[in-house]
Amino acid sequence: MTQKSHSKLLTVIISMVLPGSGHFYLGYPGKAIILLGSLLILNYVLMYISTIYVTPLFIIISLLIFLALYLYIIYDVLQIIKHKKTIYKKYSHWIFTIFLYIPLMYLFILLIKNIMPIRTFSMPAISMEDTVLKNDYLVAVRKDSLKRGQLSIFRYPNNPSIFYLKRCVAIENDEIIYMDKQLLIHFHEGDQYILNHYESNQITTIDNKLWVINPYIHQYPTIKYDTNETTSFEYLTTMHNYKREIGMTFKKNIHNKSHFFYTKVSPQHFFMMGDNREHSNDSRFWGSVNKNLLFGEPNMIYFHLDKNWIINWDRIGIKLNTNIDKNSI
Image (cartoon, rainbow, N blue to C red; front, side, top):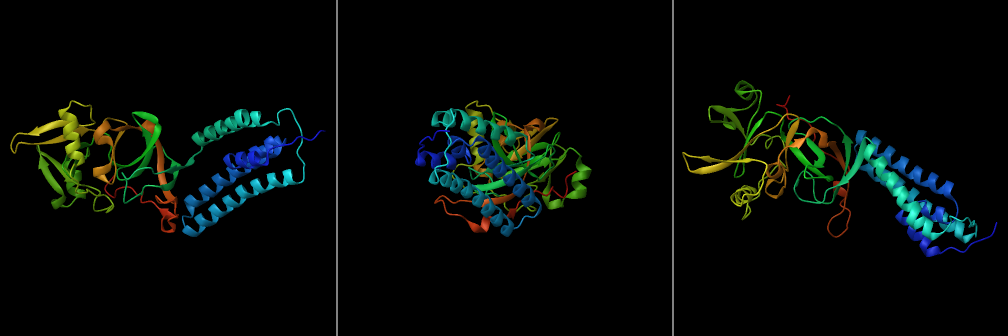
């Protein structure tokens, strides 16, 4: 076999972009696939174990093990170049590697990612603070059921390619009233259910029905309403006045000349809200979420990078409070 000169810099770069691709570039396709497959299997095994044993120490050790294998793959490809073990094959060319092998492998990884029962996500916004912070990285377990009070990751109804993280505040046939800094729910089980499960100071009467005032806030203290110049309620009102489509119906209270927003959750749907309620784009704006759009529940936070790209060690290994509402069915 003849020897072929390969770019050392390109080999390192593509190995960093996709582990194993440097080996493919140098003419070792079998080794490339084995190394990439080993890294993927290790990743999913460590993620699965971490959902059972949620401890900061295990998460840190898992990240170090994954990083060690990643760095070994780069080291190994450099050793191949150093000892001039490059094998010439017709597909061993940068064009095939960059424009064929790497795209195909990324497509394969994407397909695997979409069918696996466990998956990682990142939090790009502040809509769930202080439960989940911006730049938290999460491990989520696939689950097609949801109860009141649970956190859930789901596909955004207006663009299913985007995933959202919110808390379920109401299930099918529950009725919801949203006013400024107040969420009222009439649970579909009826008045007696509400009386049996909530204190009198949490209950009010509207239109001859009992409504629970701000459920979940006492159980999940990270739920908050900030005092901003423009609240979500005012924003909803503005959208209604400009005849924009929103997820709730505008209602007027004739007695005190105020207004509120109302909806009843459709069958097989869930009403989802962010815990940082003045900074959350949620079901109040675009409606309830169909069961078919659910991915599952976030299990824990495994990593966090702040805005300066500094690791926040205190956020590693935090188990998320996904317990169902104690009053939910």
